[in-house]
Image (cartoon, rainbow, N blue to C red; front, side, top):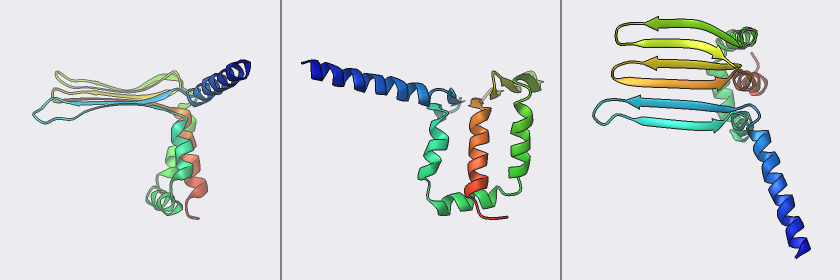
Length: 145
């Protein structure tokens, strides 16, 4: 009985540590709602640490292809993320029209994009560290320039 209790405690502790490790960077949140007949409603919450870890399982051919297609934007994206980290809470774009609202900002070290229009709403929240990890992995594992 004591052995079973120790095993359960070990398993429980491992699950707590794995959850804390996975959630350490926060979550990537994507919410999209289309207000029309047959419109889509997508709501995803993904642990931010899962994306760079999952990239290790992507076939090299696919990563090379993605890195090749993004090769011109990679230096810009890398510099952009580096600069955005200097402004953890800053508003970059705010457009308020009669019926449409667009907001792009950093908040708490995360890139936040909000679009509200009469026919759709889209909200994206992604930690800057995740964007930096993904761009670094694409640069490292992509084809030589």
